[in-house]
Length: 132
Image (cartoon, rainbow, N blue to C red; front, side, top):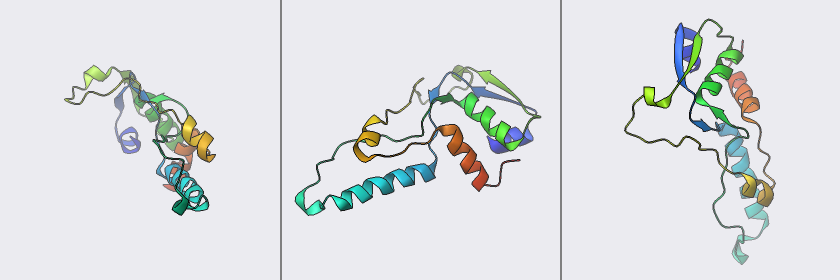
């Protein structure tokens, strides 16, 4: 989306599917936190914090919201970004309209800090030298 908003005069982006982007760095920090807890708990004695733990950044956005924020941070103001329905992009894959993960369990069990997606997007783009 960074390249598309920089090179196209107009872009139609899906607005009717909501989720939360996940910055790989934040996921790595969360995994490190979980592993540190595991090491501390003496694995030989059996680890009692088994189960499924979800992680993604905080907040909710559509692909349209995500693209608009990318363009804003990059200073790509010339691109006319317009919302469109997902049915305008036919796909054999059925995607859920709402795919936000509940991070309550990982936060409460391990004390994982979960940054908001816009803060993480800004950090990611700064690391890429993509912010103008």
